[in-house]
Image 1 (tube, rainbow, N blue to C red):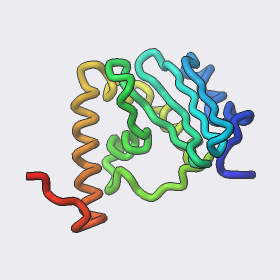
Image 2 (cartoon, rainbow, N blue to C red):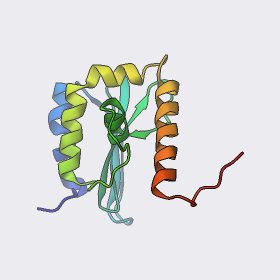
Image 3 (cartoon, helix red, strand yellow):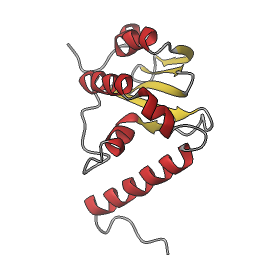
Image 4 (spheres, rainbow, N blue to C red):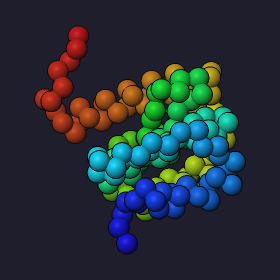
Length: 148
């Protein structure tokens, strides 16, 4: 079995969540001529969810209904919530990781919704962005010049 999914097999990524979280598909795009890239966007009522296959790497992203064009990888939010040492560790971006993120999404749905609520999403994204930048600087000293 491959670690990514062809477009025709995409429902394996999210099938069980459709029913469990009452997701509504709102957009689906497939690019046959670009490595079979595709994405599927859902409304979870409290926030948006997007599954992506980009050059055979799978991603699961979320966005606030208040900022529907600002997407963030769910693994960043997961690691933020769990106070992990790294928000952006080297990951496989494969079906196994998507399955793990789906389980996290299901178990922590209300907490994620709170972080992405109209009152909190800017603070959540700001904190995560600051931590990601600091993490990048730690991992790649000398690659980023101080903007001050």
